[in-house]
Length: 307
Ligand code: GLU
Image (cartoon, rainbow, N blue to C red):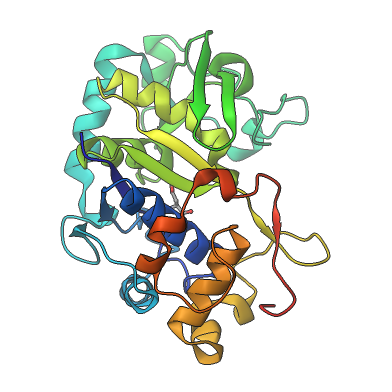
């Protein structure tokens, strides 16, 4: 089966050095296996995303020399236009697991005593799972989120870069949200439904999403889909150890394009990933050099020259 990788950026700002590194690694990994690339725009959070950023993301990827075989900033590949896919996935999930309305407020979820999940969010207590029909009817005039009941069993998988992983969803995460009370689809549902519907077989992304992977693998199984191979990348940090954020404007593609030619920037990013010697390069010239073994597992300090 042909490998299918993906670009899945959120147009909530200009592409950043970290996104560019993830995009380059995803492209090199897929292309070095003779695979194809799908590009979708993850703009479900309509309040944070803007169409002009989506256009700019596509332009920045093209400028770097990264291409794709399917999708882009075109209809059908923007999450904001894919509600029917998510409705269908929700219905299929609800046939396999208990999906229930949850009226808990943010304050209730963050109650001081709530234990915390591995990703730092409060572990959901299951409070609304056991409501009776009468209790539900009494709340029906208020908008509810939809949660899915998770199993008390160990989900195990092997990350393509960080090796064996495990998570017990009931103990470390709790029932999680598929659709928010404001009607927006949750990231976990949208990303899983899309990876399944688009035939994605390989997900390359930052290690900050390692903690979401067990939920996504479990949802893939409920959807009857073979989960993709997940390969997480180390995060980028500033020389003082701080994690880079989108707020660092001097590291967005607008600023970087003003300072470097595309091959100069691509060569430098590749070298941070352990690929090549940092000299200017087109992405396709790096394909034969690419190997996951060369990519560090520790977070990568951005070299002073780039910062
Ligand atoms: N859209 C997410 C982001 O830009 C990435 C989601 C994913 O790779 O699973 O952070």
